[in-house]
Amino acid sequence: MDKGAKQALSQYKYIKRLADVISEAESKKESDLIQQSNQMQTAFSFITGAVFMAAPICIEYRGNLPLEFFMVSVSAITICILVSLVLASVAQWRWKTETFPDIDVLKDAVLDSEDWEVLSTEQGQLAQEVDLMARIQKEKARLNDRRVKLIMASMIFFWMSIGCVVVSFVIAVIMQFGR
Image 1 (cartoon, rainbow, N blue to C red):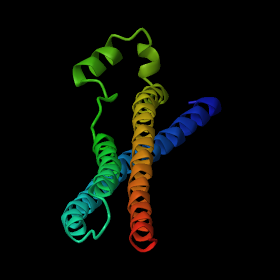
Image 2: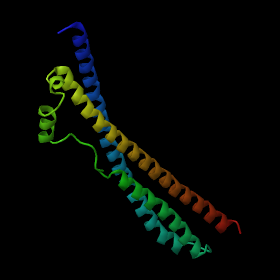
Image 3: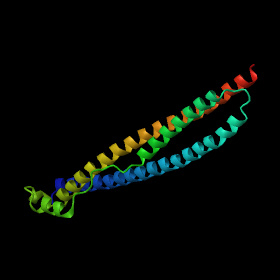
Image 4: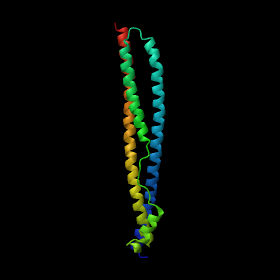
């Protein structure tokens, strides 16, 4: 093996190691995002339960606050939490993604390839493996970016629901004691 071939082989081995690290990181990111989304769903479920448990008590002891005020407040809070919950649920979805081809397809691609001479070398094999990993990693990264956007939107709606709680409380205090 000449010096140029050894250098190219060394570069492909390095690229393959980097591809392994990147693919593993993308898979871990996917798992972490799904776990975060799951934890968000749990938190939002507790908040929803708390709102529906507190609403009847607040309505019963509302004083001179109109019932419509509570209906609008609880509706706004509930809508924001439900949208947040739905977005967190969608973020957990396992979308169809690029995967490694079946073994029969790989076998045919290697044995029946017009580039069979190239694939007979370690460099050619590494190049083909890196190309396959690159396609899969790109698709996984695209889907993870989608998950991140859904989780961010979910958090925005969650904070909007908290904002609705605070605004409703402030308005209720002003209406109750401002007279």
